[in-house]
Each structure stands twice: as C-alpha cells, then as structure tokens.
Image (cartoon, rainbow, N blue to C red; front, side, top):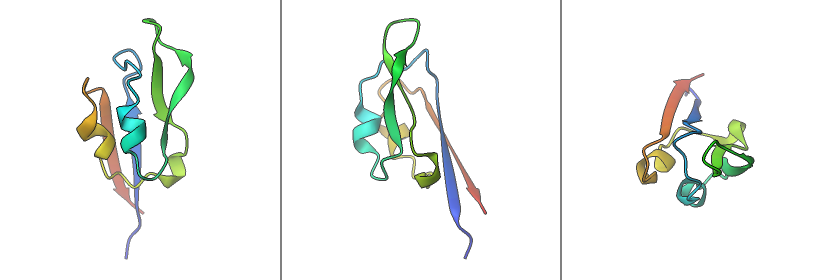
Length: 74
C-alpha cells in the first residue's frame, strides 16, 4: 500500500495567526511562526512537515482561506 504524504502551503500575508488551523491539526504539523508578516501577525507554518498526511482539516477550518493542501503517494 502506498504511503500518502501531505504538504501545507500557507499564504503568509493573508494569514492572521488566529491559531484555528494549529489547534485543528491532529498530527501536530502546524505552528505559529515567531516572525510576523507585513501586517504584524504571526503566521502558520509547517513545523513538522514529515508528519503531514494531507488530511486537509487545517484548510477546512481556516476562516481566511489562506491554506492550500497537497497530497502525494510515495
């Protein structure tokens, strides 16, 4: 059976750092970055990229639709 890996791409400028996607991620992939975007918000990023399975929970709950999820079989 093929293993599925995922990747989360966050539009750093649109992200307001609401933390909803971080809390929803059951695999502890996302976190808020220490740096801020041009609006002064700490944006989400993939802290543990090797754990992502592409479940898309983070993208579904994002109120600003700034998350894109990719999945690939390996």
